[in-house]
Image (cartoon, helix red, strand yellow):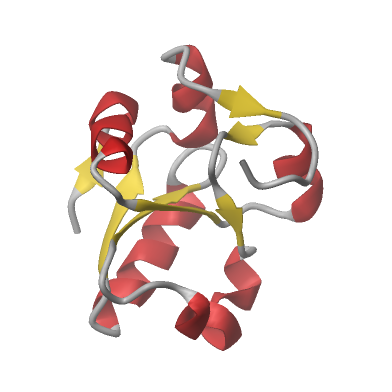
Length: 105
């Protein structure tokens, strides 16, 4: 599985990649990368079919552990998925767009 840095992920998002946040709703509401769609890690086995199969998926969590598990799960099912190294913490540290609340975008 390929891991992407926050800046690499941002470049891929600008090219049309899908950003999947696999944290819990309270974590997501606190702060999340702008444009991220929330599906908690525990729900991925039941909900992964909601994800686009024709798009690259970048998976983000808090620090990178949960996103790596989710990306691996998706790869095994034929998706193009990458984990964002360092997660939301690294995304924020890089100064990339973020927002609070449950809204997507």
